[in-house]
Amino acid sequence: MSNKDIIERIKYLIREMRMTQGEFAEKIGCDQSNLSKHLNGKLPISEALINKIVINMGVSKAWLKDGSDIPFAKHSSSAVPNLVVDESELKAMKGTPIYDIDVTAGGQCRSMLFADEYIVGAVNIPNISPDCRIVRVSGDSMSPVIKSGDLIAVRELSNLSQIFWGHIYVVVLDDYRMVKYVRRHDDPEKVILRSENPKYDDMEVNRSEIRDLLVVQNVLHIDTRL
Image 1 (cartoon, rainbow, N blue to C red):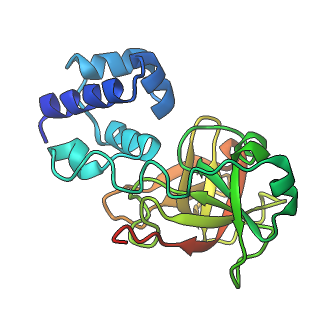
Image 2 (cartoon, rainbow, N blue to C red):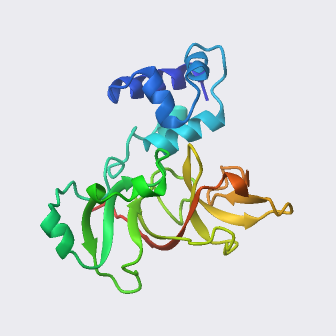
């Protein structure tokens, strides 16, 4: 893994997305001064920084690290159609609503995350409750159980203290959202967030830092070969 080559690919992303360096840093949840030091070679490119870019920007980790693959998978830009739904259609919809959002990108609170303006449709599929919400996932931390571009049906918990250990959740922190297994910690004030992909290390998080938990009820795999 060459830091110089990765730096050039990060700069390419910033140009391609027409962002300033500060906007890019905010998008991936990185301090702007630290990102500048990474890009100037004063700080090494860490695995943590790579993971932040992969998760928040929906880029291929293989491409970012070694230049193989392509920057964006076919489905990374949007796994659901870019539809415009007017108010009358929205009221007439039945089934589980689909939101044109990436649940692993950004740090909006739940109320902003599920604003009606993001609804692009609804589906009636057996075993998916209309009380759920269907959203998109990017990144490979939960692969192969949940692949980048897949859709997941999630349901919010009314009581954050009632966690089904070992289940998959969307975990909402102040500045970060991620999809992980939530495991019991020896310290009752903490939880362990675990990825399916063994390349990702476990994370320890204080329970007090968790703002919302959305339990993943169903996974809808998107076949990009079609």
